[in-house]
Image (cartoon, rainbow, N blue to C red; front, side, top):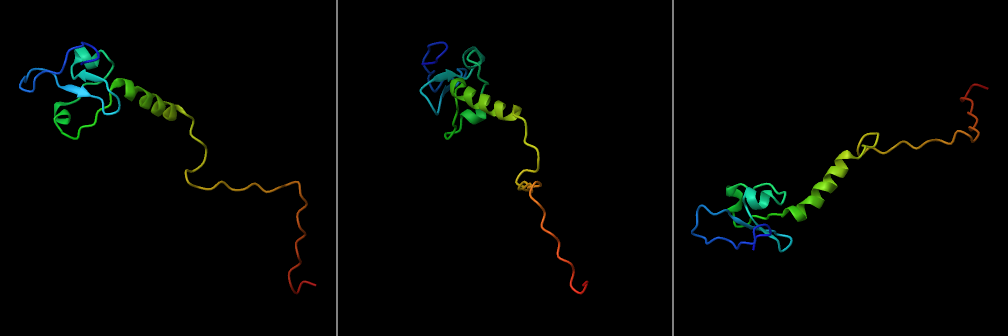
Length: 107
């Protein structure tokens, strides 16, 4: 049953009927139409993708937390420095510096 219109999937021989999409991660289902999937906040899936047997699809309910998390990472301030480069360790400037040894033969 479609979560929006409460209608079952159309018969396989009906060419004009929208494709029935079942979420790969939960038990929700929607018709691939602007009246059903569009009202739920989802984008319509191209027919060539839906016809594949191994098509995995995520409903708007499962997809929205993923998008929110991705947007929060994108909005986060990037750290200064070069990615993967180790930061230089700061030297302790309060400790006395060791005395330099005079060069050999300078005595």
